[in-house]
Image (cartoon, rainbow, N blue to C red):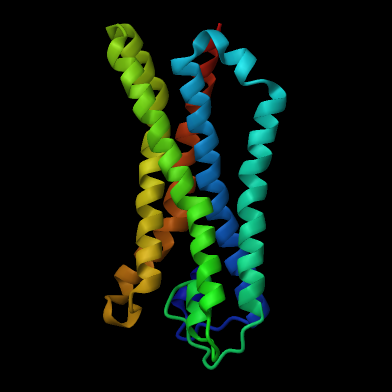
Length: 222
């Protein structure tokens, strides 16, 4: 990608474009659903510490992780497959990388079904996990508010890295979704590139901050 950005011509084959869409979308969907599972784990540890081991068994943890990966992959695969069947009347994509929405806009035929599938994918992989994370952290903050100062400090220390990563990822995702619906030709090219790359660069850089704090979780349950 760096060489492509520095080049005066930006070309990609149809197959490579859809492969790029699949990889980026599954990354985005899996990131959000994984953050959702992590929020549930923190909710159990903070709000139900005495029942944590009975509620978060190894089998349940593996099931949640499996669903966090399989759900986005399944719905995204269906949506992208539908996009591959569309006849296209253009070949110019107004973005740094390929997206399903930009491909669908090039279609020569009505795309109502594709638009509906895209909305379904967005709801399943973005909005539902977003609502669930907000709900769990509302419960966590309520529990922390009723606790001691030491308890509040432990909640803050354990949950803050995850919340920072979640908020920044949500902002990056919102910028990417908004950019997909906006005419990039009317924007500053440098700004359009920055907003596009933020989604695939910033969250992975911040992820280690979340995982590094996970080791602290053991103290909640002992």
